[in-house]
Image (cartoon, rainbow, N blue to C red; front, side, top):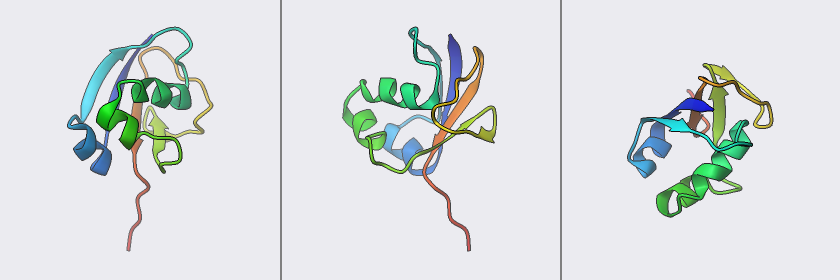
Length: 85
């Protein structure tokens, strides 16, 4: 499965990348599994996407639960919670 990944705000700064395209291994088909797979890169990836860190996900520009599968060709975005005021 091939997806486009987007990283916003403090995640973009911590990871040093705003966008990438990835071919995912079998079984990596939800935002939660994708996040776990990205943590395996280690270093800043493990820290920025660590369990317990508040990171939101959107698939194809719509907020989604982390356990809902996405399709081949999806755009998956990760970002910290946003507050306004």
